[in-house]
Image (tube, rainbow, N blue to C red; front, side):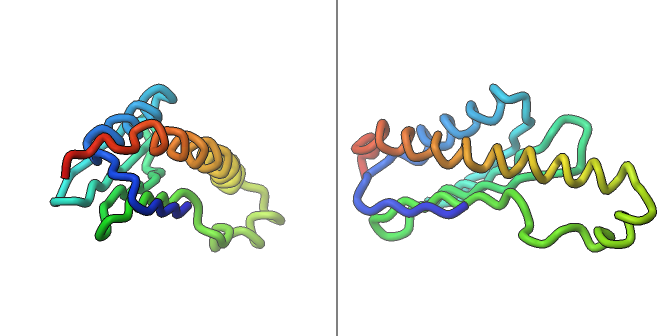
Length: 123
């Protein structure tokens, strides 16, 4: 997921707080850090190694939100696992489906949040 807005003048702290709340309401654990005009988040399901990475940054006068939800390719063991069964593959496929749904919801959420927070930054 990649989105870019021009001249929206959004306060990054407010937007990152909104994004953090979005994931926490869905019971994800969120860790984040800030380096100037770049905020990075790692989002994970409790007791899981699966993660989503979110980046919010200001590039010149633009706002960029990028989410790394799902690799476009299936797991490396996809074909052999189809014939050998595998709870692991089933778990991966279900996780992948839930992330695709989450990515769509997140995209809509960010669109609304950015419009609502437009003009909130005092650069």
